[in-house]
Length: 331
Image (cartoon, rainbow, N blue to C red; front, side, top):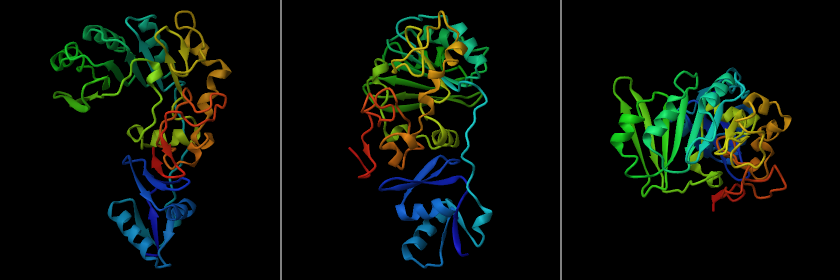
């Protein structure tokens, strides 16, 4: 075998100092030397004829962990296409709620359904009764929306395990429930035995009391999957096909961004999306963002256009990112 060829789903990404290979099917990544990644980037395979001891050893390790295979004909194993498409107009929506709804939830759900939305994240910025949350989630019963995430303020009394299990975790659309300002960090998995449905309760000591607490960039937010990877190649990984309805009912790309496109009480979502300016930021991809374009994590990382280092430059690096790709270190 003259070559070591990466599997089609394993894509090299080069940064200024370091490089990684992303397995977008198994949702994992591995760091590799920059010069080797450059060889993979060119042909998706490296020659073993040069008998470089380091390359031979790396090929052995990658083959052992099923990142690729040996072959005489690497041209028969090209990488997968990195094109991205979504059948609907909107894929995800953030819905913010303060103490009570400032807009009709059923009308909002119907409009999201019409736009082809597949997932929503509902964020509560105050402690509310579990029964009220249950009523909100019930509003999605007759929709085609596939999954729901909840972001809640931790409360040991209101959100007891038995109350959550009895009143909330039976919803098959419910995927993750985040509890912020928790006294501990933990992940608890709830299984519904009959259907094997799983809900993750994610407890975090981080504070999240308003839309201004958003935009943090860290390794914990990496998404190594085909949809996110291809979307980040072609569009903004945070804003493409996304919209938000803030706690006042105002429509935007994101609740943390200042620009608004009307209020849900008086403007239909489809009319807000018809504004050309709505699609400006969703087109800014990581390959165009300052510093991010030189980062090896750019296709698996999230982005933020609301909080940036230079408010006058829409292509500025996210202000809440502490990674330096030129040094290869987190600050």
